[in-house]
Every structure is written in C-alpha cells, then in structure tokens.
Length: 602
Image (tube, rainbow, N blue to C red; front, side):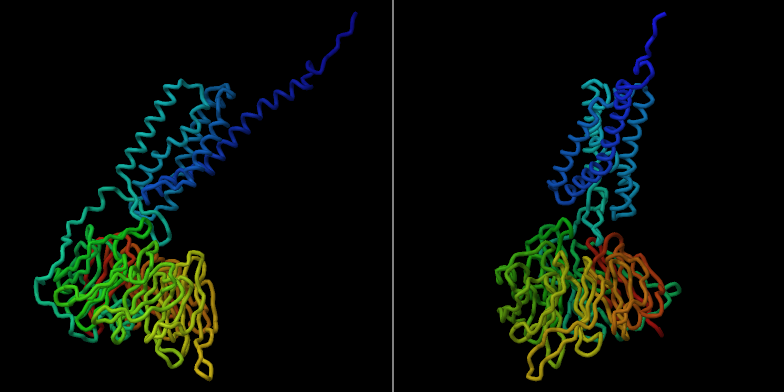
C-alpha cells in the first residue's frame, strides 16, 4: 500500500492558518481604532466647533480642521468594514454600539460644560441628536448600503442639526468658562426706551449725602465694606422684602446710590445709557444715551463700569471708553471725553471696565490698550486732561486711593500686576509683578489688611494671592515691595475679597474661602457660589451668587455658616451688590431688583 502523507495544511497548521488568524484580527483592529478616534477626537471636536460657532458667530478653524481630518481617517478605517463581519447580528451590534456611544459621550459633554443647569435636559435633547450627522458621515461607508440611502440619512441628520440651531442658542459663558445654552425665544427683546431724557419725570437730588450713601464702585471706601451696617441675622424669620423688580438693559455695571436715587449703566439697543432710578419704586428719573455699542462673545454686551456720584454730578465710563460728566439733576452732559481716543489706546477683549475714581479736583480713569498708559486724570469740572501715568497696560481693575508709608497714592491692578501712582502727577511710585497666563487682573488690591502699609493682591488662572509690604528708604525713595507671603489660594478672578478683623473672605474659583491675613493660612473653604461678588456688611457677608441668589453668611474664621438666602435675580449675575442703609439693590444683564432688608434692633 502506498503511504499517505499528511500535509501541514491537512493538520490545520502552516501558513493558511496564519492568514486566517490575520483575517480575523484585521477588522477588529480597524474597528477598535475607528471607535477610539471617533470617541476621543470627533465627539469633542464637533461639539467644540458647534458651540464656539454659536458663541462668536464664526467657526473655530483649528477644530474644524481637526474634525475634517478625523472624519476622513475614520471613513478610511471603516470603508466596507461591515462586510468583514458575516452575521447581521454583528453588523447591527457594531452600528448600535457606535451611535449609542456617540450619544452617551455628547450627553456627558453637556453635563460637564453646560453652565445653564435649568436648561440641561433640553440641551441634551437638542444638542446630542444634532451632532449625529458627524458620526454618520464618518461611518456610513462601513455598511453595504446604496448611495441613495447613505445620502438620505445624512440629509435627514443635517436637517435635525439645522432645526436644533433655530431652537438652541448660546448666551455667553459662566465664570468657569462653561457654556450658557438657552432657547432662542427665552430672552425677550428689550422694549426699553433708548433716547436721552433731559426732563426728569420728578425732581432728582444727587447732592444730598448721608451715612447710608453707596456712591461708587464697592461702596464709600471702595473696598466692598459697609462697616456700620447692622443687618438682621435671621433671614428665615425676617427675610428681605422685595420692593420692586424691573427689566434693565444689558451690562455688568452695579448701582451707585445717593439719597433716594440709584444710578447704573445699561446697553439699550444701539445706545449705551446711564440711567437714574428712584430707589423707592424703581421708576426711571432720567436716562442719558450715547450712540455706541460694545459686545463680547465671551463677556456679553453692554457697559461694565459702575458710575461714581460726587458733588451732584455723575461720572461714568462706558465699555467703549466714553467718560461722561452728567448733571445729576437731569442727566444732561456737562462734558464728555473718549479716553481711548484721547490716549491713543485700543480696547481689549472685555471692554473698558475700570470705574472712575473722583479724588479732589480729578476724575481718574483707566484707558486700555498696548500703548503703556494705564491711568489718566481729568479735571472733574471741565474734562481737561491733567496727566497720564503708568507703563503697564490697563486690565480690568479700577483705581483706588490709599495711604501707604505716609503718602497718598493711586493703586491699580493692571495687566502685569499692581502699581502705585502719585495722585498729583500720575508718576509710578512702585510696582509689583503678579499676573497670570491670560494677563487678566480684575480684583481690587486691598491696602493695610495684613498690617500697616501692606497690600493684598489676588488674581485667578492658577496664580493665587500675595501680601506685600510697602516701604521707603531713609531718604524717602520707594523700595521694591517686599513679599510677606503668597500662595495659590483665594483665586478671585473678577470678584474682590473683603477684610474683617484680621481675616480675608473671598470667592476662590467660586467657593467662599477664609484666610488669615497674617500668614495666608486657610481657615476654611465652603459654599459653592460661583463667580459672583462679596460685600461685608458689619460682621456679616452678603454674597451675590453667580446664579442670581443672594446669601447672608457669618464673617467668622471659626466656621462657614449661612444665615439665609433669597432668589434675588434669575440667571447669570456678575454685577456687584449695593447696600444703602436698608436698601439692597441688585442687578444683572436683564433685570434689577431692590429689597428692603431688616436692620438689627428695628
């Protein structure tokens, strides 16, 4: 009998078996790479491109490019991939896994980055399906479908995306750079009059002064402190009483209050307005309008600075740099100067934000731009420029008058840090670099809070805070500020900390924090209020939360304790509070309200 040879192929070994293993592993590798690329790159790139486009009205080309390249790579990896899986169950399972994963990751992105929590379910319902066309475009060649079916499904998904864009919009960012999605119909168009009112509806007197006037940014001392305030501590038993609520124009200005009237700035249509309200009922007394408009995709529209009331006049600086001196009785312009044009400056991304400081016969303001001028002084009666000062670009701080080492000086946080200037000439006395990667400083410096002749400075974007000792030599020369301590705490961004009995209280990236002013030691960090504002009233803290609530809390280093809260406003609120006696005035970019707060002993 002849011998029968058994070949390697017959035994199941050899090269054919190796090719079979490779043919099985190849589609799995392609599938895995395509899925990873889709979920790791396409989901974020498409969401980022859409959200940015809705926010600023133009594409973010970097992420558009990433999206195009990513779709092409996934399409190449998945081309006819479905044919490699012979069973219908496997093909359907892959399709379901890809698109369900896509939807799930879009839901996660919305939960992580949507700043409008009330709109989150709606955003999920609209945003996630609107992005399905990206996944389909990248994967539609994986399955043996007709061209008509491929293009038909793509067209349907694109129509869903277009329809969603007519319903959903973006209304700026939160302080944490989360996106505020909203319905396009949710923000009603303003019907406020925008013309200039020169005949007041009733007599207005802004010359009367009292202990309860809150006549400028952050109050009488410009430090966010009302030391003689005595508020009722139990808001559960005696909550603030709403006196009025009304629509206002856009902007992040706060109220300045003298006597029976409160003044703020608003964007009303195409006009930037300074508006005077009666505190008792919110009635408009007068409005002054300038035909300018400022808008920022990230920061919103409207003026930012708070007016200053002095000697019966109102001094205001708009977001485009218009400095006005107005007659407090009727809002008529006495004089006006464009401080950007006058100082050859260019506006920066969030506009002119520095509130005017009235000091002796001067009104001191902060032109912005890369021309090296950070301060300018004008005659408060005539508007004539008196001096220019500084060599660092102004940022978003406001000038502050202080006395340190025996000399009066103007403190200003600019783009590079903090500097002091001679009030009579604008000459720089000293400066200290304390900035961040964004070169954005907004918080006010606090003088003499860590001991005599000290300055506390804080900022965000990872930088933190520092306590400086200000000194002069024996012959009167200013020495470089000496650092007493610094840390990465109290990152205040665009709020300002307050000082009370040896301790600092402020919002550290949106969380209330207490530090020992002597050494910067943290006492506690509790209470998530977002990027709002803080005001010290006696020994109590009034906290304007970013979501519109106002919270009353103890100013105590021992513990964090809330004493009450009210839903004062609706929506994002970056504006400072104003407390004038028993009147608490709050506002944001679409509404204002006045509350009567109970006073202790009454």
